[in-house]
Image (cartoon, rainbow, N blue to C red; front, side, top):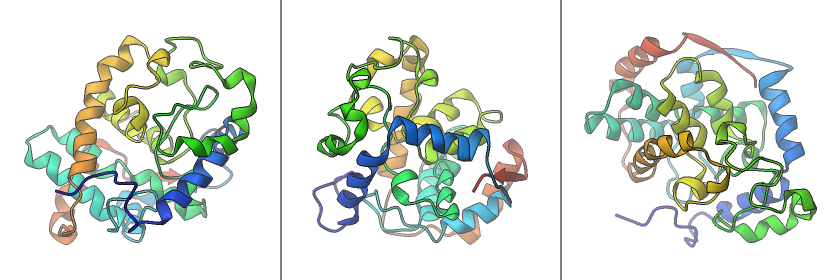
Length: 259
């Protein structure tokens, strides 16, 4: 099995360019503005079934992912099928199947640097555990003294729910599923790209005991998100009835997505 998250590989030269932009432009002000645009006061919405959203993902390749050039729908199927093979509860399988669906943000013309990639807190010091940390030198927030401590503008042990994360598909999708799926699923969706936390142990100063209780769920999910990636495709036509039934069990038929 080849090494995952291999950022030295020359095969995906889009990755370094992606993080150069992502780390330069994901400021606290930018995130607050995106949250207004897409969560609190969206200017436009598009009502879509989950199948319509999934069909769009079948056309999207993630520029930040060094490990696969398959479409995002294939990645979701590989993740969910690996979880299902191991006999986990159906809500866990569903979480695997929809966890990257927030990438439909690209439908609105959003650049990938504001949709995909690893996530991290803003408003406090950028950790050197984040991939390509040297690119943060170009981020204006790196010049703000109020943001240069491990907790920055936040109270120590405030809990991740009270921390503003860099903007992207995780937070976006979380806002749509938080009333429907169990809390472990909410954490998996909201923080699966927060690698500096769940893989490297950074940002513990911001966490409370509840975050630490949920961390094993995020780690468990992450093992499927990463290590289910393969070059062979999954037969979506054959699996579609199962997954549409699973979606119908937990989620509303249509979502008015802010895109």
